[in-house]
Length: 449
Image (cartoon, helix red, strand yellow):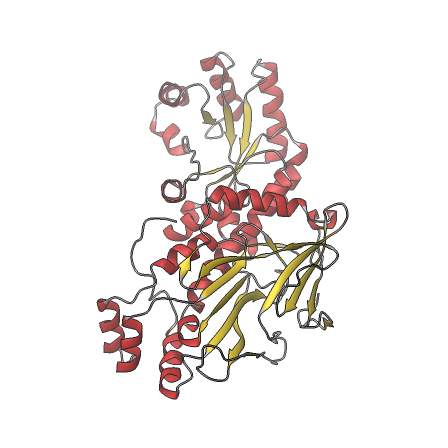
């Protein structure tokens, strides 16, 4: 977790506080309640999604405090009455939260986050949870497809200039969890410990009287293992210059324009002919997972990805929702929780607090997502992996882990996918989601999987 910083309490929608105000007034605010975060469907064409943002949420939760300035501003806008003002002045989340491990996969209906507390404490976390998970998971899901297509070739995150400055930091973190090797964003490196990388842009070449002067300067500053950008003027001449200046020891060249497939092949042939057989080729230029897949048969050694990554490659949100699924009928802390669910057309939900298991076959590949109402069974007689981890225990944040753990979890979870999950062609979820009632009987799914 990062160092505590500014309050996150106002990163929310006004209706969270108007609901709180009304519930405090009518006496229901302190009823126990359970909210769940889930997506009813995957973005079109996606076979799986990736959970990301857990670490950022826990960091934000630790700073979810209403200070005097925030309270006075809210009161001045007429949003708070005295009872709500007093409640928020002393707000500390004292409930419990469970969630899918960061980096794990999700499918339609997967309860990636479960928040259990009083209605008053839990309802005002909705926007915070959704804003973090919807963006981070969208980026991680896109990044996972990109690293999947790249196979063992590294991907470099370089989207900072294509996003809001804070979104860029979040995107770099999510991409790293999903397998990207490093980021160009220095704040992401400082805040989250992600490896950083960067060399030079076309402006550096254009600054100098001759391209060779720019190359000499970069080599003298960064060493022969640096990456020279070779498409400012003439690519062939630039490659020849870079190889000559390093006597064939140049680390890499970067191509940022043109027909990348054909150009990469021509540059590889030229490098080899000049004896620079170890010089790598890095390509950039608005890449996405489809272009990375198309480049798989070329002599490219790495990819730099920006715009497509930080925008979720066409799907900038996961459409996660935060829904009340159970509540008590009194304020007695020991009162039983009753399932509740929406019945809206195309927006229905399944009531009751859930457990979640991923059923694995004999070869260790995922066969189904099992989402059950009630307590998780001690044993099912199958190879099932429990998915929900405790993140907050009665107000104590217990789920903090190093980002490397999330990165490793993602690699392992993706390896569990059946081969259909690796396809880029349009299709349904890689595994179906099945719902079970408290007796273990299958329920019809409202999410079409």
